[in-house]
Structure formats: structure tokens, C-alpha cells
Length: 74
Image 1 (cartoon, rainbow, N blue to C red):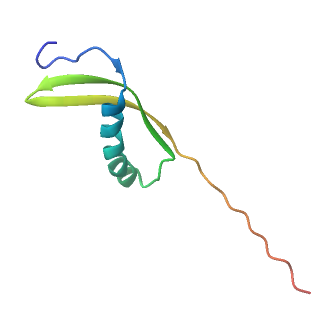
Image 2: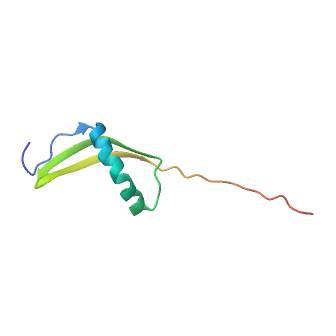
Image 3: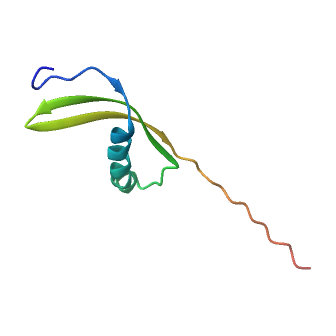
């Protein structure tokens, strides 16, 4: 791995999913939505003055519509 360059893409593991789960509230807050699914798919790393993670995430946002009706009063 070259310092500053991106490593090859790897499938996400439990450690990457844990990072993803810790970032979920921040993503939801920024988007103003609550995600039903937020799963890491794959990732790349970059070594600089620390380590950057580039994570591909599967996000599913289900829109739930509730329909109600009132009976007309005669």
C-alpha cells in the first residue's frame, strides 16, 4: 500500500459494519431521514496521517403511508 494512495476494494467485515453503524445517526441527521437498512458492502482505505475509510453502504429508506378514513355522520 502506498502512503496517500487507495488500497484495493475489500468486502466489508464486522469491523467495517461497526464503523458504519456508528456513522448511521450522523447520516440520518444530515439527511433528515431514518434508514431501515444501513449495511456496509465494501470498503477501501487510505493511509495518510491516520487512516481514511471509503465505505460503500447499502441504504434502504422505506416510505410508510398510513391511510385513515372517517365515517361520514348523517
